Image 1 (cartoon, one colour):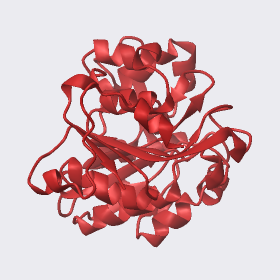
Image 2 (cartoon, rainbow, N blue to C red; image 1 turned 45 degrees about the vertical axis):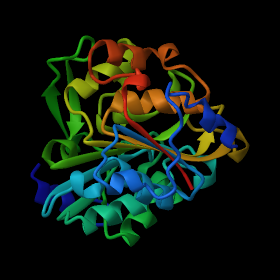
Image 3 (tube, rainbow, N blue to C red; image 1 turned 60 degrees about the vertical axis):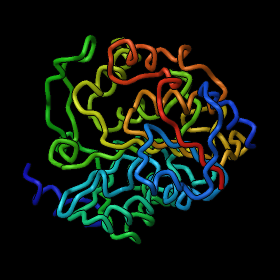
Length: 308
């Protein structure tokens, strides 16, 4: 399937937890990201205290600005978590304010097209609509497209994988110039936590294979094929139990936080600490670190801590 045909048929053509981010260095709380404006580019930005869209605008500057990642006339694919038929207050999906703001900023940076999709677990149309992500994307000028048919996926080889040797990947991932990963931090019954690496399961068709063949190893294997250019972890409202779908908004705690990094392993490690866990206790993070996909040793990174 070529891109033109694909898109012609596409749909709609508690802040104490933040201190758990004990990175091993003295805190550097930046109210206006002055060091970034002086050309300091950090490995990771951790921000708290604002709305999702406002936090993104401040934190992205600490890692070089959106222009570092998106150039004029490039095609961008954004992968939020839109897996569940749930309203935003449930925090089962990525916050729509954040997704909409990232789409808008990509266009402002000169993007030709910005596409958003997920291979959902519940009915994809209900997920897109009731999560409010569809509306946010369209309001920002983006194009939200489906992932509900195997015709949208192409098989690729994963030469660096140990358990995952091949996968059927959504062609948006294969054809776009820039890949931005926007997961939501939440509890998960199978992996304890669902964050950035786990969110990549929504880019493939045959994810049942992952569950049957060492899930944690497969999660670590996939980024050896394609790492996102940027990872933006939504921790505005965090599902602390009953994940990945949750039962009600009572499963959630409002953190008003966000983590941004080009290093998917570091981003997951920082988010794990924010959740109140240890990266070494999450098997896929430990495996990915050992494979050299990224680092979970946050002490060796330059980190911008921003408080609004």
